[in-house]
Length: 354
Image (cartoon, rainbow, N blue to C red):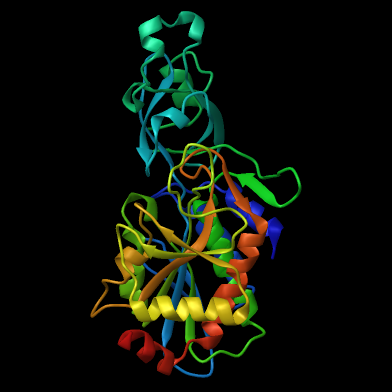
């Protein structure tokens, strides 16, 4: 597992609709393993690895975008008003560091403003601040100073959290685990396939605009026309205090989604995933989520695409900092390679039959 590459991917800026920096990094990395690439007109990008057969066409995707924000207005006093991009809960936002990315690529540090408790009335302290009332402070005195820095409405804003190894060395904390993890896994798969024979054609890469409605998955699937699809994503962990009946524990291996609001996998697909994990000795756990993944869009493409969502659970996703287990990530890397090695036309027919 290339941990340096994983770190680099997490620190790139790439909110929905502004994934250029991530895409360029992926393009460079994909080029180490294949010269054949597929890109749709929204910006999703895949490397192609051809095996011993021309079918099935297997699509494996992370997504480039992270949850973030967009500048919508500059006040006369030099503060930024913003729009959330992706699902945010207001209570994880106040006093957090951000970077505004201008059209030239310049990163300007800022903070989501908060009022010190000394200045709050007692009744105000009990009420959560509405996101519409929040603002970002970049240290400017007025609108002219903000504009002179190159900031304009429409510029993207990303959370700030460097990657750090946590106590014991087993876990990592960083921004954008959701879903630079999936991007990293797509690259790891292409690297593994460079030294492995497989009975299919693999399209491994990442989509765009997943966090705002699985949009890139739609156009990517229409471009590739896959026979099988695997979404590789990070889902919320359920192993922290205050979470009741939660699914997903750090350190328990690959997450196989049984159900989410976007898709119910075919029984034949579920059987294929479980059999592969058990026969390969890969730790796994089941997951039920109220969220969704790119599989929710891809499985409805054309006459239907057997799809699954696999990945890891991560604590505190859709915030500035998430925590993942390195062993879980290694397990997903092994799992994806095993799935591709076992997946041929006969296996696809078995999945369809259930």
